[in-house]
Image (cartoon, rainbow, N blue to C red; front, side):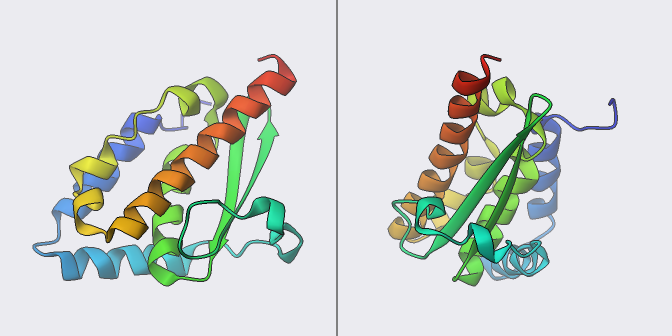
Length: 145
């Protein structure tokens, strides 16, 4: 179990990855590549209930609770958004419920994401984070973790 990285460790890796790029063109390309590598979401989860509210694009987010950890699966019809949700999944999926709930996700500011996204995309990013945390809170309540 010691091979599982903490949220902070994964955030630091993402910040390091982004520091390799000199400009935002390169960073956007990297985000797009992350989106292309996102494992496809099973069609059975592309339902109205799984759509993240507050995103300009359509984002489907599904979560499963296994052994005190939450695993996220997602997809989007917009390639940049697909990259953004891919980063959030990289950071939060497979983490303990309490860690997800208390995560501050500083990497979003450290890589300059909020300031380089259009306001609607930035709002969508926050909506995705909120939904992921809401899943964790709901699983905690249901499972009395």
